[in-house]
Amino acid sequence: MATSKPSNPKSKTQKQPASALAPITLLGLALIPLLTFSYLQPRVISNQVKSLYGSQPIIAYTQNNNHHHGTLSNSTSPIQTNEQLAAEYSHSCPSHAPKTHIFSLDPLIIYVENYLTPSEISYLLSLAVPYYRPSPVSKGYTLEAYDTEIRSSMSAVLPDDPVVACIEQRSVDFQGFMPCSRLEDIQVVKYAVGDHFRPHFDWFSGMANPRISTFFVYLACDGATEEEECQGGATQFPHFEGAFSKLWCDSGFVDCEDDSGVGGVAFKPVVGNAVFWSNLYANGTAGHPGVWHAGMPVKRGRKVGLNIFTRRETWVPEQK
Ligand SMILES: *[C@@H]1O[C@H](CO)[C@@H](O)[C@H](O)[C@H]1NC(C)=O
Ligand SMILES: *[C@@H]1O[C@H](CO)[C@@H](O)[C@H](O)[C@H]1NC(C)=O
Image 1 (cartoon, rainbow, N blue to C red):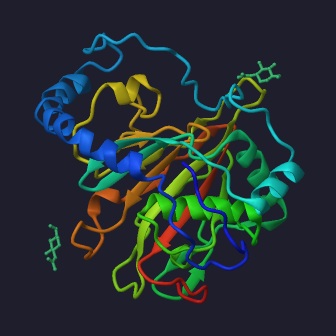
Image 2: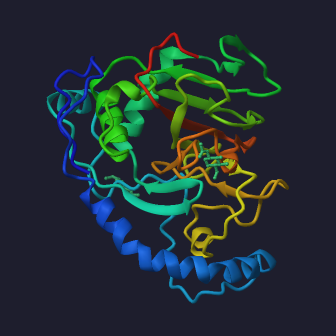
Image 3: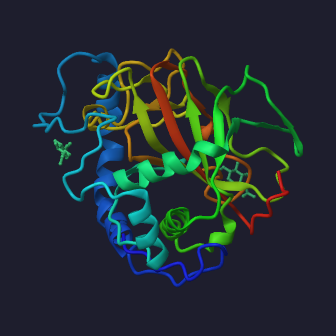
């Protein structure tokens, strides 16, 4: 999607809205009849799917098997060096066209293909290196504790940076051109074998300025060799109860073979793609129980993700 140039990447001020979300709106409108259909139909399909794991697909579908997760496609543009990327992005945010799929309307979960480009990913991975710290866990309102029973990973809060600013701009444009000031500082999170994040909400009751939404973007899923991918590490929503098409399994976005025994839906770490969800009910209250989620343990290799949290009001870093 085309985004406007951040006039000053260091200040999270509202920028001119770009017209690029029109395709999403149009897509949404175009999807209404489809959704009506799919909400009538796939409940049946999904029940069948559940009893047919590992068996014949129900929907005849010629699949191009290009969705190998962890593989970066470089067919569109060559990887730029970090210096080239920083120079380009400080001049203006490039136009960017991710592909979106509504996964669920209630709770709202949107799946985004190619949210970040391969160049952006390698840039963020390098940028994060000096900033990794053990990931904190918020308990209550202000107390931060490091509890590896709940969470074992390393997090890097990214500094002000032209590439980060464009990704922030993309993330608020995606959400109806919100002001950038609603975003928390974005964070890279690294999970090694055995690392996990137990099921949790990104909001907690009583949060004065709640996190209204979350993006989790997959930056890396590496195995022992360059060809290998990580194993495990899905983003699992154990309380998700809705039905979904078998094509989510076939596309490689959802793990339909292994729900880790907790049910719901498990999004696989597909590099470059993002899962976006709303943490609140449509009426803006409480937190939606359907978005209780976990970073499942990484069984092999390493997974790196990017957290982008949006608050209801302007985010003040001291707020927990
Ligand atoms: C990426 O580019 C390299 C060199 O240009 C090429 O060898 C490789 O096959 C490409 N990979 C993909 C996935 O297109
Ligand atoms: C908001 O929606 C939820 C779920 O439908 C409902 O339980 C809650 O009472 C609603 N709150 C208000 C203030 O309408």
